[in-house]
Image (cartoon, rainbow, N blue to C red; front, side, top):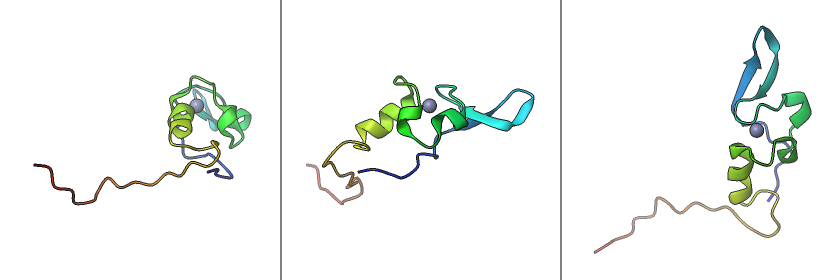
Length: 73
Ligand SMILES: [Zn+2]
């Protein structure tokens, strides 16, 4: 699964430069990231979390079944 743009990561403004933003986790500037997962550092938690969720991986689907009513005895 792929998304065209990965822009839902936490962002913060550069100090004193309110028009420039960076990833709050890996500190890469948004213009460097450019909407790409690979724009984040390999150690970025946001990137790692999406990779674990199957993004940019071939043939995996992300389906949540967290809220099924299962009975545990
Ligand atoms: Zn990042």
